[in-house]
Image 1 (cartoon, helix red, strand yellow):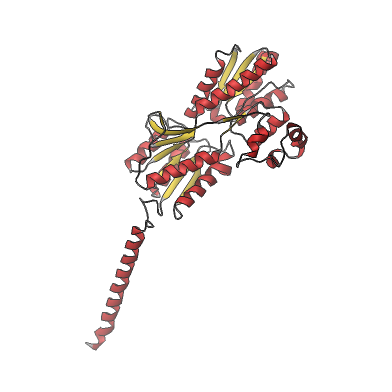
Image 2: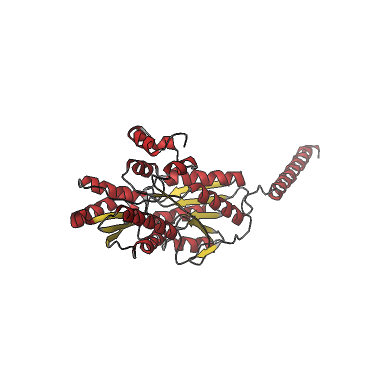
Amino acid sequence: MPRRRPLTLLTAALIALTLAATGCAANEAADGKGGGGGGGGDKIAFLMPDIASPRYELYDSPLFEARIKELCGDCEVIYQNANADASRQQQQANSALAQGVSAIVIDPVDSNAAAGIVGTARAQGVPVIAYDRPVLGTAPDYYISFDNEKIGESIGLSLVEELRASGAQGGLLQVNGSPTDAAAGLIKQGIHNAIDDSGFELLAEYDTPDWQPAKAQEWVGGQITRFGDGIAGVVAANDGTGGGAIAAFKAAGAPVPPVTGNDFEVAAAQRIVAGDQYNTISKPIKIVAEAAAEVTYQFLQGEEPAGETTLFDTPAQLFEPTVVTVDNLAEVLAGSDQLTAAEVCTGQYAAACEAAGVTDAG
């Protein structure tokens, strides 16, 4: 019998340790620090569409993750970029679900194809927040973006006003975004709202595959050969396609007419101050990134946030964009936490910045 005494003590010790561990786990769950379902220890997939624009790595992802960490210190954000491949984005979503994510935030490569991601996530009880671009076919749980149709209207009207003020003659080229991106479709509609009754003929328009600037440049180059100096202006749906259009005119040795943009990239601001691009759209990414993080956290808490409006049968929150030209560039830069005058006014742009009143002090 004496030989059994150590086993009895060992068993009692193990029982005590087990009870202590169980108590700790219960306290952790009560504090909301356990895994899953309460915004504590949850994993969140943040799936972005492409690398054609640098914004996703530079702004969207870090800003979203920073706000999530403020709301939920032990939540984990799984960031993936699909590099304009809808199949890859589907695989990334499947992988995220296999890792046990509690929510998916997705900027879809293909708005229709992403419906499959929504359906798969829904079957597993995982909410999906569409970010920047909507999902069609199967409605996600929420949609957050700037008002894309308003963006198209704003850049189009701004261009038309400039052409009228300068007495420009000729017609317009319209360079749209990707045909698989429903947000591009909204921008396209907004542009048509602005220019169809403007008195300026629409010479031709083009849907740019994957928003690729090189594709936009190639197409605009062909239109320069076709229409020559009959092109009064170019309504381009974003800064990348606008930059492609400008490059086409320069490659052809032709004067660059007013060209629009959207996204307020550094290169676009530099083209504006240099007189190569007429306008862009400031849509501070911090606004949508943080709003997406806050809505995601609400879902993690078991809430169903109501949208301020509905778009594509989805509760939505849409923010107002701001048109930027050389006239208000200094003001917009002064109030921006995304772009600074110091970043814009480098080297060859310093003199132009000074002439436009754009300084490091704002």
